[in-house]
Structures are given as C-alpha cells and as structure tokens.
Image (cartoon, rainbow, N blue to C red; front, side):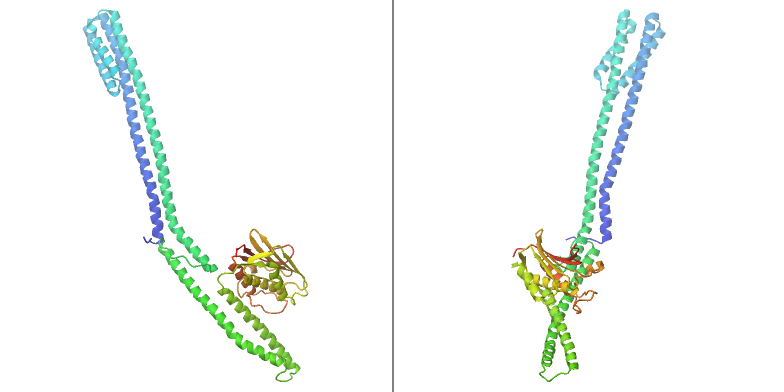
Length: 465
C-alpha cells in the first residue's frame, strides 16, 4: 500500500496534477491558433496572387487585341513587335495563372488559341482574326470564372477546416477539463475520506457505539497521526470507563455491608431491645434512621446504574402495556394517593425489554412526583406513532429552563429546583431513562404540550422479539 506524504505535499501534488490537463489544453489551443494563422496567411497570399495574375491577364488581353488590330490596319513592323511583346506578356500571365489553378482544359485551350493568334501576320481575313480574338477573350472569361470558383472552393475548404478544428478544440476542452476535475475530486477524496473517518471515530467515542474502524492506510501523515491519537484517547476512555464501573460496583457493595449493620442497629434501638429510649434519643434515632434510608436509596441507585452500564443487549418480548403501567403505579400508590393520574393507553401490547421499560416508567413517574405541583394531575400516555412506541409522562409545575435541557439526561446532574419530598436526588434518574431508551435504540427528550408544563417523551422503534 502506497503511503501518502504530508497534507501539504498532497495538496500541492493534487494542484499540479490538476494543472497538467489545463496546460495541455493551453498548448493545444496555441498550436491550433498558430495553424489557423498559417492557413490564413497562405490562403490570403493565394487569393492576392491569383487576383493579381488575373488583372495582368486582363490587361494583357486588351493590349494583344489592340496591337493586333493596329497591325491588321497598318501592317507596320514596329506595330508587329508591339504585338509580339503583348502576346509574350499574355503568355507569361496565362502561364502563371495556370500554374496557380488546377484547370488543365481551359489552360490547354487557351494555349492553342494563343498559338493560332501568334500567326496574326499571315491572317488576311478580318473575320478569322476576329474569331481568334473572340475565342481568346472567351477563354480569358472562362479562366476568370475558374479563378472565382477556385477562390470560393478554397474559402469553403478553409471554413470546413476551421469548423473541424473548432469541434476538435471543443471536444479536447471538454475531455481535458473533465480529466482535471476528476483529478481534483480524486485529490480531495484522499483528504475527505480520512476526515470522514475522523468524524466517525469522534461520533463512536461520543456515543460509545461499537468499535473504532481500523487505522487508515491511504491518508496524509498529519491526519493519520490525529487518527492514532483518537484511537489512543478511545482506549484511555475505555480504561477510565472500566475503572469507573469497577469503582461504582466495589463502592456500592462495600457500602451495603456496613449500611445493613447500621440499619439493623437502628431497628433494634427503635424496638427498645437494648432498653427504653427517652425523647431526645428517639429524635436522634429518627434522624439516623432517615439518613440510613436515604443512603440505602443512593446505594441502590448506584447499583442499578452500574447494572445498566453492564447490560449489552435488550431482551425484547411482547408485553401487556396496561400491566406494566399498573405495576409501576402500584409501587407509587402512597406518593400519588393525593394526585390524579390520567393514564391513556392506545397500544395494548408492546415489544420492549420489560426490565428496561419498567425502569423508564419508574424514574419518569418518580421525577413527576418529586418535581410536579402537589395536588395537580400527572398524565401518562402510551401510543404508537410511525412504527414507534411513544411514552409521554407529563406533570404540572415549574417549566424546565431551556439552557438546562441539554444537560438534563447526563449522569450525576441534579436539578436546582427543590423536590416535593425534600430529598436530594442522585442525578441518575433521567440518565437511567436515557440509557434504557438507548439500549432499545430509542431516545428521550423534553417536548412542549398544551396540557402540561413539563413532558418527557420516550420514543422506541418497533422491534420484533
């Protein structure tokens, strides 16, 4: 596997590779432009030459006709020499034009007519002389038409060449620009893939969801170093998590034994086993018993949270929703005896882990009792929505501050508002609710409803047992 260089090298290398097709396109454009310039120069020179030769030929044919007609009248040797010179000039102009044009038939006919006209001294018949001059004039006219046709044909060929060159340039531009874009995408992908891998690692670390992906092999060295640091940090966090779990487990279990002894001692004292207690002693014993009970509750919460952390997979079963809610409310019968509890169940059977779902119910009902307004109703709703099981537990009372919502479900975070039972909470109740919902691939959040001040909504996707 090829190891990529640094991020700077990769960026510069990608930039250079992306420039190569553009440089090739620029070179081809310059080459085509040079060809167009050369072709234009040649065609312009050809047009100028043939037009000039045609003008000389037109002038020469006029001189030939004038001098020969003068000779036919005067029969003067000096006029004959002028006629011979005019014929020679006409022959030179015609030869130049015929060399430039590819019209052998016209040029051959004109050459024959010129040879006949060269015998003008021996021609006595004026009609025959006129016929010779007319035929020469006709050939010159034909040659003029050939010049126009040749120029038109050359212009058409030049236009076709330009169109072909333009089409070639367009295809080359499209192809080379596409190659350049492809190289840019490939270069950027070499950076984007490791960055996405880093984001995936961070999400896994944040949610403790699954194992980290293996280290990238094709990535800039700086990003690989960051990925290695994240792997090391994940391993370190795992170690700390194991230490925390072990600490919770050992601390809770170690506290249970002396706590049981203290509780038993308080029970013996309250039953007057060791003698009658006076009022002051009974008051101290009452405080001691309450503190012992509270400490026992805290230890049980810690054990419950520790057990929840160790649970890997939920056991999904089909359960009777009414029985689960009724069993929970029976446990809180004394706490809610002065309150109205409105239960609305439209999902008679649910597919959940009964233990996890019961913990959710217990903690949400306990939270509603502790923080809800005394004498005001508590609403419990259980229904299906979009293939999800939804549980709403709502109460009346002081609303939760918006800035406190994002930390509400973190462990060991307690609310600042006083409880109805005057007990200082552990800060684990709502955290346990969030963890139980997460284990069943659901979530919990605070929602606004029109019938209550505070409503916790747990959403659990439908799962088959």
